[in-house]
Image (cartoon, rainbow, N blue to C red; front, side, top):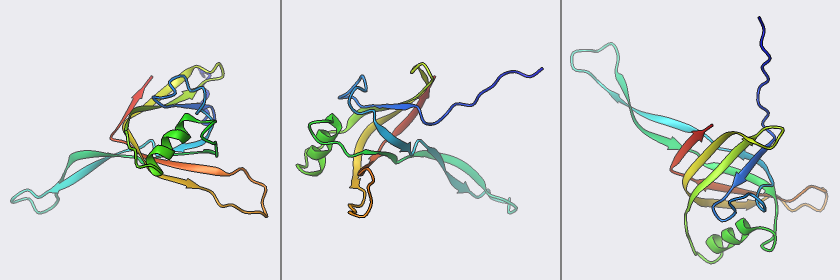
Length: 151
């Protein structure tokens, strides 16, 4: 007996920052990548056993989280104001949590990823080119210390 199963789509999502808890201003991201967790291992050689080594888990490694969106000015985005403080004025305050939600057709959260102890490492703009009529994209790279998935 077959059941109806439809995989989740990847284009309906929302990003929430601690200074914009309702996602009113800073939800217009084109893409989010870097929601990954890697378990680092360390090889251990056992005395008398020469056929193999044991690999044991040591620690987890995360991200970086990369967010892309159309460029927004400081009067349009709290996030842009935050980035200007970090990169132009050297005023640095890590964010406790950034939340990424995968949404369904009713705009309700299906899955939610929280990244903790977040701070920006890079803020880039795409190429300025008079020969192309494309949206100017800003890319934000964030470092984080923990990735938590909730349902």
